[in-house]
Image (tube, rainbow, N blue to C red; front, top):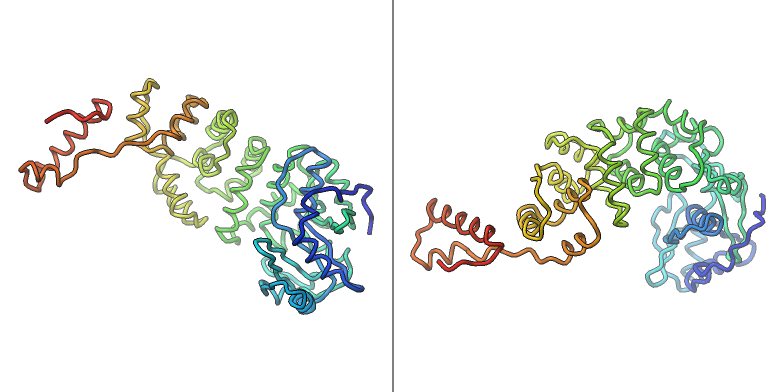
Length: 395
């Protein structure tokens, strides 16, 4: 195992009391536990590329069998959840902190979704079963980084590279196609690895075997990533975007939307997705079902596709469209049309949309009888109220 000549022991997140407690318990005697994966990658990106990626969930790799990890943690008074015990994974809980701990493993067989594994104490073997070299980096509590497969060199050149044979890694889990482009987009610096991209193109139809939830999870991250404006056109050109979004309707609207959105320091993946889809309810519903979008996300996409009136952007017309269409739709369309500035956005976000002051009970109190005529009168008064800029006239 190569020891990277870079120490990140000064990082504040490494000094977290809960993390220290868990790591000390797992490292007693001849046992060895190290932080692994995305946490190490992001910490190095923050240092080497001066990024500001937030360190979130921390995963730990351990040479101990899962049952021994559980035993030690429980004896130390630490709560343990057997989250994936048959796969070697448990979760230690201290207060609000959760640490996923997995025993070192190596793959024996895989069917493209599930792998048969056996435990090992070989760090290089454990690294070989991971997806990309930049995710196969390990970190001791003192800040020393261990790099068995050259991931640090790839990170230095901002290159996302599959571990070993790219086709074999994809056949183990086709989601790695999308993860390859997501990481390539998120790292921001450096080009896309050609060998990896060719393997993704060759095996792109394997995406159809993935669950909609997993696809949407990765697509959402791509849409929020740093280089989304570069990666989406690449995905379109090589045919992968069509595999993910069969209803895909071009990316020009999305590029313009993101250009305007960036000026406002916003990242709305659902809005960006809306720019990739046709303004067709049936196709939007079909897509939403295939990727199992939440009802709220589907309804947003449907609302974005509705006709939106062109108008001179005055305070009065803005109040009117906000009442008629709602904040979300107005913000989407103003950004898409390049009409949104920070002042207008702040106004919309703080504006209280008025409620119509007339209800059926009010008209009944005036002597109206429930029915079509009363309904027409309510609509007439609402139109009059809107035309009068939401001021009530005396009837």
